[in-house]
Length: 320
Image (cartoon, rainbow, N blue to C red; front, top):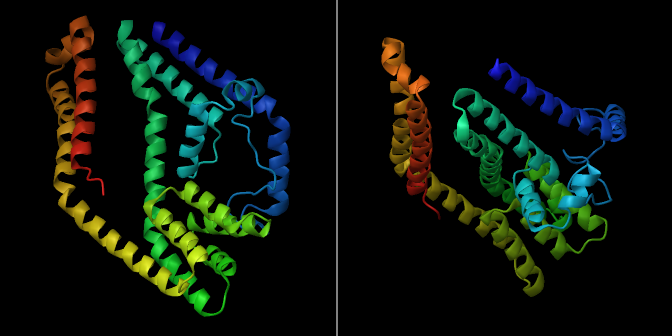
């Protein structure tokens, strides 16, 4: 009965938050749906994958109270930068609400399974899940940039040799590239076409991408525009350097594959053994699920396995 009440409270709170958000933003959502119908799902005449407005939306949340609470704070600015690096269209307020809902789910589940003060461990475990997913999206997007960047530089080099200007070459690369490079190059072109200084647009592009390759590319372009030089040869050398770096990273990942696999196997072994023993002899494992000491040991073992996995992963992760 207690479990049913807890689940009902969680579902009710979740529906209340979602319903309030939809109600307060009903006009904006219906306007976005109407615009999407006029333009088309594929983007229509839009040049980039993300709808672009000439007015910068500086709100951190669509909820007025939350926007007033979070605006201008350091954690909001840092979180907005992290969301940009992940290519997420979420606002910081939405992400923090999602984190709060995940923490509530962790509290409900652990209160149901274990109870007592152990419930706060569930708040921490599920509360960090959105942040881990955010880091995962950043890693995937960063790898996509790293892999696609040398080919994009080759396209830019060929465009410059054909007589294109730098801005036109960036637009050409944007039209011919795949996401996420497509949106960033086209955004640079649109920004400088609307009057933004090329240096400022390049620095903003570097900040949004946030990779070493982008920093090398932007720094080289800025220095070349100030001092002069052969831009085609410069881009060719950068593409060669990035390809060599990617080759070295691939060799390094091959050498560190064994300790990473060991970390995954060692982290999975306790769960596998628990399932095997429980399926063979339920009475033997029953004290772990019913006795307070057994529940404490289960929680302690789970936290220890998670911490050990992250330690071994960090040891195997070589920072270049």
